[in-house]
Image 1 (cartoon, helix red, strand yellow):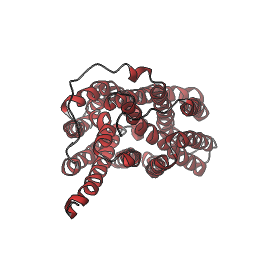
Image 2 (image 1 turned 45 degrees about the horizontal axis):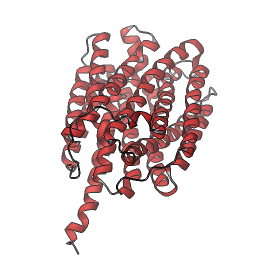
Image 3 (image 1 turned 30 degrees about the vertical axis):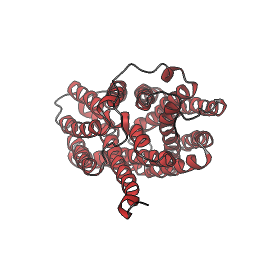
Image 4 (image 1 turned 90 degrees about the vertical axis):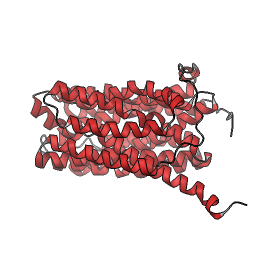
Length: 400
């Protein structure tokens, strides 16, 4: 029988890892989405259209998605924790540079660079959790990490919108960069070093990562569900600052207070997935997302905010389950977990870039109903893929 300190060590490691990755998720997504609440202000400041202003977000997600294809395999050789620390520190510094951008092309270039530097964390977070934590906590821990990303997405938008209304968009972006620096320091202090990581040479992608039907469905679900989610939030700022609502930037930014619904949803869905299985939980998340979209259709502020809350809960249910499922399915099928996670997130951010830009076009041509239609089609397709996973056989783990 071990000493008391030895018996408590796994509990301490679990809590530190979860807290650190929660803070890392906050930083990553606060920085990534820091411009989303500022799209109307950026459009006015630089004289660009709504569709063009959405590139301040799409450039970052595009850079992130492409970089994931490199950082995931590299982490197999150089380790998880060094990449996490480097990613968070550099991203916060680039965030400060974004606040000083002298013109629109420079801002887009810096946002593209920020997407690249942000790729270190999401490329390895779920792989780190699978390697370092007990198997019966994987879905729960992944849910907590996704909860951190939800809180980060909310705080980045809220802080940038509130500060921008008072002092301008530059100070809005700078304030989010400071949040990133604080979170990077917390992660440096809390995150346990990898103990179960085994380095392997960086290699080409496993063929099975592109052929396994369950992984392909999960990639598609990530792209479509994220596409719907970003499309709605990209256009929401324009809707709330236009008739009949006519809200200011700070007041419109308060709509992101619904994000705790995603934090709660991802955590609860992780626990439900551990208990009832991922196949049972994911279709429900798609249905919840669709219900929330429909609630936003009336020109009623209360209904719109309620619909956003329901849609956010549904989305984070789907994403929390899917992102935690990918490394498990990959491991059981002999695919390096970080490679599969990188492909999932590449699809996820490709969907964000594509449908986020299409939302600006949809808004310009058909206002809010067109945006909802675009998002609803994405959710419907992701629901079909989620149901298809129920017919794909489970894989026996190569090692329990």
